[in-house]
Image 1: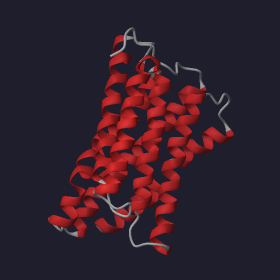
Image 2: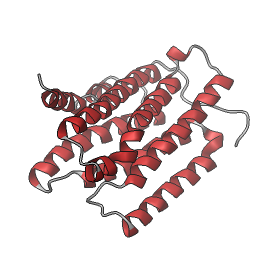
Image 3: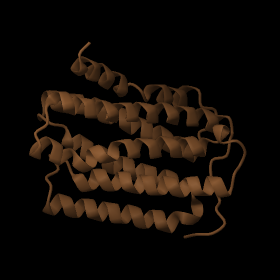
Amino acid sequence: MTLAEFEISLRTFNQYSGVAGILYFIFFFKSQKSLSRIVFLILALSFLADVFTIFFIKYIYPNSFIITNSWYILNFCVVCSLFYSVLPVRRKLIISILAFFLVGSLITFLSTYSYLESNTFVRVSSNVFIIFLSLLSYFELINHPTGRLKNNPLFWLTTALFAHSCLVLLRNLFLQYLVFDLSISKELFDSISIINLLANITKNFILFYALVLLDKGYPNTLKPAKTI
């Protein structure tokens, strides 16, 4: 199997990697609380983005940046709502971050990027902010432990988002430079894409595991002693 063939196979597997969590939530989840709905929405958005990407490229336009840009914006809004639910006394900070992201995204689309091309600000800032919010969540988990981490859905939710954002950050930061300035080969781009696919697959399965823990009734919020 060539690298290109492996990348295609992995892309197909990635497309359906969130289905397990989606089906579990729809058919087996016993108590659908607000946090579990947010996790379901993250998985559903990822799945729909992959489906629409294939359709969009095949029938509408030769690239899928309009879908990618939309996913990054919607996904970040949903992730912020997750941390808004998990870290109740940091809500002002989370709202400020979300407002900055949305205003910054709008400005870059109006002044620098077309919605049909990759927006570096949207990609990178969403990754950086998710990493920052994840670190805040880790900090509260360390300072206010609630049992074993392996049974804590908040730890796994944070880990899924943190790991995914860390792995794709550098790719998003240098995507324009690699493709348009360096004009890297398809083989090298496939290698980079594999990292992105593995990150997303890992994220989806960890989110599925977190859903299972939430269904079993483990804690679904953190209550830090003081705000920033």
